Structure formats: C-alpha cells, structure tokens
Length: 466
Image (tube, rainbow, N blue to C red):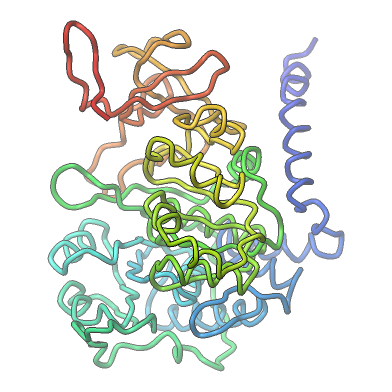
C-alpha cells in the first residue's frame, strides 16, 4: 500500500470527526456557495485574522448584532466599515506591516475595532494588562518593540508617561469614577473620530499574518511577551468545539479581560462564529446577571473568581434575573476550588466547562459538566488534536495513576518569547511543559496536583501543598 495512501487513510477518522464537529456548530451550513468566494477574498487580503473574520460575518449576517456594550449595539456591517476606516487612518498615521501596537483597553467596542484594524494592516498586537503602573508599562512597550499605543481615556496620564515618543491613540472606554487619571489625552487622536466617514481602504493588503503578544506572569521582574501567531488551519477551532458546544451566532458575554489569553482566545472564536459579543468595561456580578437576562446570553466566558462572586450573591438577588438562556459557562485561568463545580451547577444548571491550560500551551484538558459531576477536581480530557503526557524528570512517559510533569502538544504552542533576545520555552520531545504536576485517572482524565516548584518531600513522599 503506497505511503501517501496509508497516511490519507490514517487521517480519515480525524477528518470525519472534524466535519461532524463543524456541522454541529453550524459552520458548514452558513458557508453557502455564494459566500465562500467572497470570504476567501477577505482571507487572501487580510490573512486569518479578526479583520477577515469580521468581513466574512458582514457578508453572511450584515444587519445582525456584532457588539453590544454600554454605548449600544453595532451590526456586523457597521463594525466592518468602521474597522476599514480605522485601518486606513492607522496606515496614514504611519503604522504598517511588522509594526507593533500596544493595546491598553478594557472590554468594549474600541478593543474590537483596534484589534481588527491593526490585524488588517498586518501589524502585531501587544495585549497590555490595564493594572500595570506606568514604569512597568513603559518597560513592556520597550521590550516588545511597540511603535504605537491605543489606550482607554481613563489611562491617559499613564499612557503619556509610559509611551513618550510613540504614536498614541485614545479609545473612549469609561472614565474612572474617582477621576484619578482624568482623560489626559491631550491632542492624541481619538478612535471614535479617527477616519470617521472616510470610507478609506488600506493601500496595501496585509498578507502578513498578525501575531498577538500575550504577557506571561513571570515570577520575577516585569511580564514578558509570548508570541502566538494566528493559526493557519481550523484545527484549534475544531479542538475547542470538540469539548465545548459553541455555535454560530451565539450571544456571548466575555467577562474575562480581553487582554488575557482566555478572554482573547474566546474573542477570536466569537469572531469566527459570528457571535454577538456582549462586553462590559468592568465585571460586576449583578450587572452581569442583568446583561445575561437582557440579551439572552447563551455563552458566558469567565474566570473562577468571577463565578464565585456570582454564586455569593444572595438568593433573592439572583432570583431577579432569568438566566435560563445560559447553556455554556466556560471557565479558565485558575483551578476551581474544591466542591465549587457541583455547587455552581446546582444553582445554574449543568452548564459549566472548565478549561485547563496556560498562555504558552493554550489548553491541555477540558472538563465538561459530566466530567465535573463525576470528578469535580478533574481537568477533563484533552480536546481533539491535543496530546497530554505525564512524564518523569527525564521526559519519559509515566503510567496512568502516577504523578509527574504535565506536558502538552497541540497546534497553539507559542512560537517563543516576543522579544528578540529571549529564548524559546524549552520543549521536551516536542511537548511543552506546563510547569504543573498531575496524573491521569483510570479513564484518562487529567487531574492537576500542583506546581512543579511547589513540591516538598515529606516522609520520603512527594507532597503538593495545593
């Protein structure tokens, strides 16, 4: 049997599974013959990027809701036009391919606009934590080679101090209640007027794939950037959909900060699935329940502490809001506290999906509601296309039940540190170490026992305090 034929046969089960997953999500149905050529042109122009995904959504669902925030709603066609105008204005301001643009914004429409516009230019996006002080922010901008900064007006004073000499653009965002920083934008161009009505188009197609620089939480010094290019295949999308039932035209509330890997990853998925994004500048538990009820949110993206705060609300407060539309509550970012998964699902239904991963390794395991009912501490099974290995100190695989280093292989491993002088994370036989230790149970579910560097030896046994 010819080698190529054997390879084709061996990949057939994976291809069939992927087709079924995409069909269940509704992606096959919306790709009609009239739509595919125009979407393909958008991808050829802007690469696999938020700009291209938005153009495809505007083609398929022009008048449907794209973003809802405290300023109201924008349809896909309105958002796509604003992105085109903003990209052209950025280009006129001197931003081009290979430039890096820092983004210091909370969750609102201008984050979406700026990210999509920068990707349409083939420039890179550096996602900045809004809690960073000016000296730390300045250091990160230098380390990552940023040439421009888009910032919320509430961070104006910080932006002026940290981004001297850079091109600066002011997003609207929200103003702080205490007026601690004011708007401080001086004469910096504002996104809500930049390029307005220009109906411009960039002179040169992006072609170069945009890279997204996510900051990792190092143990010493300031955060360092980890580069994640936009995937050139649909495999990562299929992987997540294999464990979490997301669908085309979901209404998705992303409560997690969009500048974090978890929030930003779900932002990318929402763009591909033509979801309506419901965004709030700040997380407030009761306001989140009100938004779920008002917009009939199907998917909530959060971190565990946010879900804990929802659960801590008085019963009478939660009872004021109809959250029956929720079918997926996707959580990641830290371990679920003991017994929390069961308590949450007893109140909100069996809708909780817990994703275990890291900025560098994306995801390693996804626990469904069934997994969490059966084994509440479990990190679940690896999604399609992800391999997890439990290994000893040398990288040799360990049997099920044995505790060892958690190693991950998938298509979303980071390309390495963003700054040119940093080393690529050390791989082990093609696998990325997560820095955690764990074990696989008798059915292959992953449980994380603690951090590698937290291990202590007591009575000759390895003990993980977490």
